[in-house]
Image 1 (tube, rainbow, N blue to C red):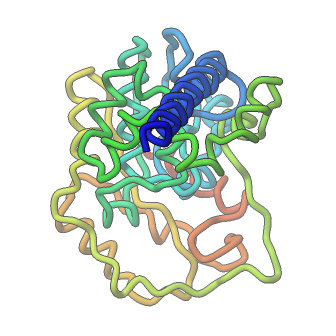
Image 2 (tube, helix red, strand yellow):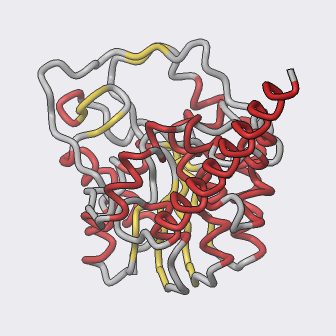
Length: 293
């Protein structure tokens, strides 16, 4: 029995040591990454200056054509992330401020994502390699259900979120393999597809009357003298429950409603995402309304 206990203890110690070493190696790789995604690019960056920064989900990533801002002489970047919520957008802005970014305007896509005050597992995981190296990230995640496991158990976060920050991502990061996330100043254009879903039902979707992370973004902008522009972006013609946008306007009257600026299905890749052509129409309206010289 004594030998068994000693053997078991050795196995546990060896396992913990391996986990600690692997945790350190994985983290070291992510700490030098700057050319794969938006999160690590911001985290490992130094102070920058922007006239316009765009934040939000895919409905920001696919709807704000950054080049059109650049063509107006405005230095801009689209930090919208497909699948992301306001949880991740708020954290990204916090990291920018910490790195002394000088930002004149933040355009926030705030519509469907106002219905949630939690993160998206696949996107929030992208911040976890840095959780021991950033008080801001640690504090942002402290209220999450699996915080203790993620923070205190070595290598747990890399196993738990293996598809996002596991061995494949570590390998590609280590060899500096680029993605398309940083192309087109962060904007990702979409094309029309024959099989695109052109129906949507948002009847049961309701905005929170007080979205914690929306309020965080608004407050960060106020404190740092950043002009805050929150907008609702278009959806296709065949949507059930469009009164959702009226509910948003009731709770957040400062949010500008642009859901009906582009309507025709020919301008949509799917019901909630415009094609490049539709995005250009929408972006042109935003520029004319807020940045017309």
